[in-house]
Image (tube, rainbow, N blue to C red; front, side, top):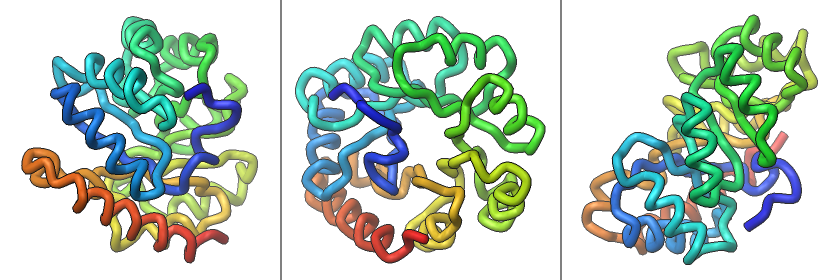
Length: 212
């Protein structure tokens, strides 16, 4: 699909997935869509990740397709060529920020400190990934950041689970959360797409009760 707005407005829960098989990637994306989640982030952590992105873009065009673990300008070019609707990085040095802001799609650069948030703001970015959310301070840290920089919206990932996603989503400056609990490797390997759909449904229901 072509995003007309922010990826943070598609769904309050963004599945973060590690995939290497294009066929499974398509079936996984369809399972998430069936569960009410219209967005997915495929990380560049496997040799077949870009092939998975291309397969989802071709066969499940209705889902908003993000590429994560973007580290370089080459990753940006490859991801866009594969059909990415938005890009996500775990962090962002000055050169990567410069490359990200020139892309034609939305971006969510990763930050973990207030200084990094301010650097992103200097580049005109107000929607950011907070990573790794748990080790970096969790909900209390994000709540504290909301005081001096209320204009920034975050998507925390890294340590977000079904047990704590509501605590994150209740924060005014958290628009969505990302996580891997929706697509555990055991279910993907077993090709248990129904179970993944059920996890998606449960996450959507929990998120609906947590909006501030």
